[in-house]
Length: 214
Ligand code: 5GP
Image (tube, rainbow, N blue to C red):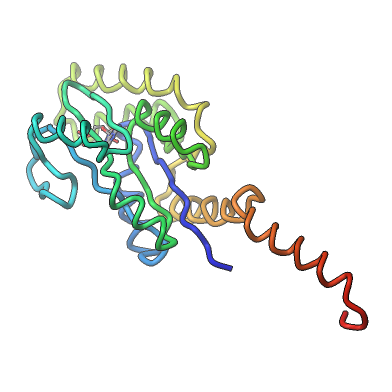
């Protein structure tokens, strides 16, 4: 049976470790998954490469992509545009890969509306205290920065119940395994296998009419 890819959105608090989680998932199962690279108008951070973390483009270029319908969704986040290029996603889904979009909640909900079969996953640390501890990290951030990230986490938490699954990132290896199992299990949902069910029903009807061939 040919298997079509599932469109998967992964969101999570800043500090949930979702970036590391995605890298680990992709490196463990390189044939199963494809990670979409977004376009953004924000400036690259140190170590980021055009085409790897993001396609870093100007506001003008971004607006042209919107006008031409080249983005599946886009959102403004902290004064910058972020969007998902359509072409790569559609190509990989056709090839049977599960395509992962690592995007924030406004984008996640837009994708779900446009493509109702999208699987929404939300990554969270085991507790609020743990999130704060991760944000405090090595003690390099000011209390102001930590506070504003905690504020943002409070806002993001409001949207958690729109997601299909919560993934608690306590231990990286366990978490990658759980995420992979959730996605693989999802392939068995009946609504994702309509063509197969139709075929087996038709074959059953046909075979019941034939004599002595059971
Ligand atoms: P950052 O600037 O830290 O890389 O990303 C800021 C936020 O934008 C993160 O929550 C990230 O998941 C989200 N983001 C990245 N790419 C996209 C995208 O294509 N669309 C939307 N809606 N959000 C994105």
